[in-house]
Image (cartoon, rainbow, N blue to C red):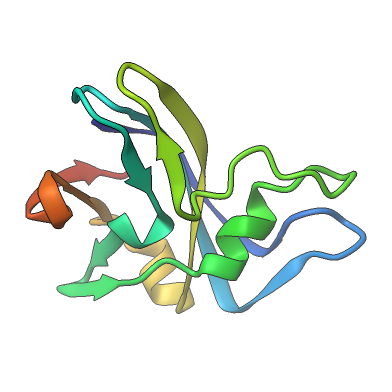
Length: 127
């Protein structure tokens, strides 16, 4: 199960000493994931797709890793092949490098792949 705790835009993310810069505009989605199953699951930014204007956009893995870095360079959560045990929760940011028009779109949704091999999909409206 995934919940969105907000969405923002930026031209760079990460620690001020070495930020990741967007080609155009980053859409940054704060996400909380809880494993409601009975086995460990692998959480990866590739499981989250941004949908807007009839298009499906992939997460920027480098941007996502950088957005989850503190000023000291430590990474709290990378959403990169992270194992999540049953009844456990993790939070972090997933980043998408998109055009300014897509970033400003009001019909953004987050598609979350769940189930075995991502066979089930849930949609979360992003405001």
